[in-house]
Amino acid sequence: MTEYSLKQLAEYVDGEVRGDANLVVTGVGTLQSASTAQIAFLANSRYKNQLETSQAGAVILSPKDAEDMPAINAIVVSNPYAAFAKVAQRLDTTPAPAKGIAETAKVHPSAELGENVALGEYVVIEAGAVIGDNVAIGAHTHIGPEVNVGAGTKVWSGVHIYHRCVIGAQCNIHSGAIIGADGFGWAPENGRWLKIPQIGRVIIGDNVEIGASTTVDRGALDDTVISNGCIIDNQCQIAHNVFIDENTAIAGCTVLAGSCRIGKRCMIGGASAINGHISICDDVQIMGFAMVIKEITEPGVYASGIPATHHREWRRNGARYRQLDDLFKRVKGIEQELQKIK
Image (cartoon, rainbow, N blue to C red; front, side, top):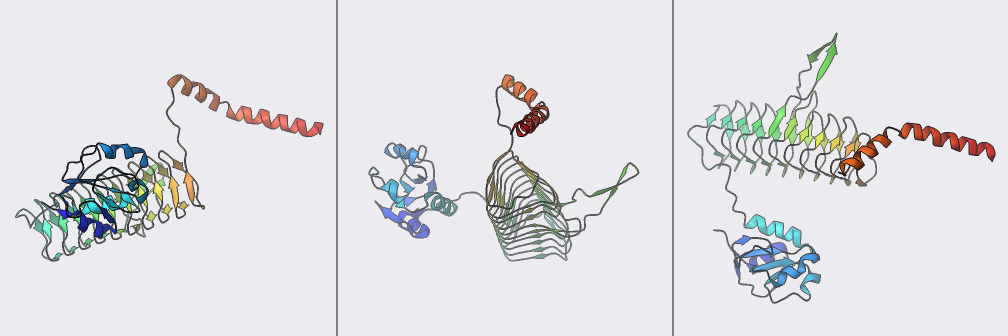
């Protein structure tokens, strides 16, 4: 069991202890569910009344919320949510994808394994692959020829990483992810399709998280690139030759079409679609269910999609939508007539 004193955790997050600094904490929880051996957090003042009934042994909160809090042990810090994330990492009980090297794992003689590598049951490491120190690879995962996996990376069960792809250090690749499958490259000829070999790679930087069942296609000629610090949720599609710059976050079921470029520190909401061959600048936030069909050149918040409405209202609006062109022409005609009167 992992345990820390409140003093140790406060030092780790650069916070101030209020109450018993020697209190031992063994886990994390919510204000409503935490036990006396757990630490919770308050990031939104609207839930401050829960402090009075919480059974948590301690709570992480801001200086403002700490001003008139009830008698409870606390770590006071300027960013409670970030501090809670750091504490949760220290107290994380998630098991490793693998421990040791299973007898059923198959490693090609030309592959290189670093120190303290763990391989689960039926892992396959192909020729020329290089696996860094302290990498853990879960059961039934396939690492293709000449793949490079950086130190400290976790690859969970059932992941497939195709040939020559590069995965950085301290990454987290979740189950079912496919890295380096062919991009959708085809040329039409006389009513049939000719496949264009996809000879680029996927290059993933350090500290990147790839969600479960997400697919990252390899480049057609150049590489598909996901830069340092990016986080990509489950069931996303990253097409060939996409470039995603540092510390961008992409929520579930989002589709990035081929050769689009996403800037630094962007946040893309779930079920969004980004058109191919366009660029999005740094510090853009795109709301969920958005469809982006042209370049975004200024930072800010962007939205599209159609919110759910009652079916009868939706049908009326749908009928009116079909009349928009006629309405535009009528308004244009009225404007022209008014100009004549002036």
